[in-house]
Length: 372
Image (cartoon, rainbow, N blue to C red; front, side, top):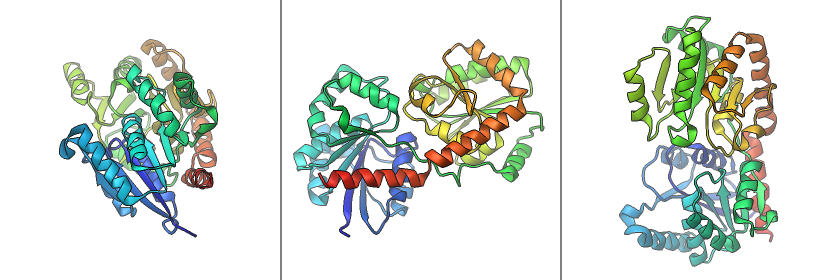
């Protein structure tokens, strides 16, 4: 069988939802059938090393070192002409713009654009660029139905047949219940058996609304001192959030920052919370479900495609901290109900969002595109 060359262009390689899914996909595609290249438009990023260990060729074309936007475009076009991928796949808004233009200039004819959000902050200029690039795009991969529908509504002229769903895949061996690690971590942090841990793993960015998380945490803790709230992740709001907590310290609220042991922290928690203003298909929710945690999340984007209300978690149409806090307090005393929700979530991830499903579906899309 002839080997297939796929070149991915992505905005950056720091830890994030899309970046994590790119790594997972590269690891799942059979090495005996695919040659893979990843081009990052920003240098640095902790995912470069695991990609290279997976046998992926990684190139960084940062505009600060390639002569600005035009120099970056020239370098990207030259790279595509040199490497000659059979399929060009772009990820995230900036890379979708830059990558598709470079694809046209380099003569690429099989181009996939990855759209992984609801277009929450897409401006008029983004829409014009997307409309211009639409005829160049063979296929769009969306990770949620809500995201797909929002993109089609924004562009209107893009044929629906080009827009398909490739849902995220989760490593269910890595993210799983782990009683031994749970006990060890809780003991190391001085937690009592009755302490109830609510965890949110998220990039500290306005779109995730970590301020709402802190507001909910303070309200719940004022009525239940055995509750604990962990906010795990880094980002541009980290210093601001630390300052907010420093002014009114609370030993039950932990800003963990970037953390290398997210699966262990999930195993030690009792419930997951997500306060986002907008989502595509949330890795955070899937990872929590895989760890058998019930999830309470705002009812935005693709969250309703993951959470079946009352079955594996709760969706909140309200963004009012007091109302969400009351609902959390009501659940904390229902341990058996929460355990059932957690098991339901784990089972759903195993059936619908495994890494094997991700790899198989991606391969099917690649094969179909190459036969056109």
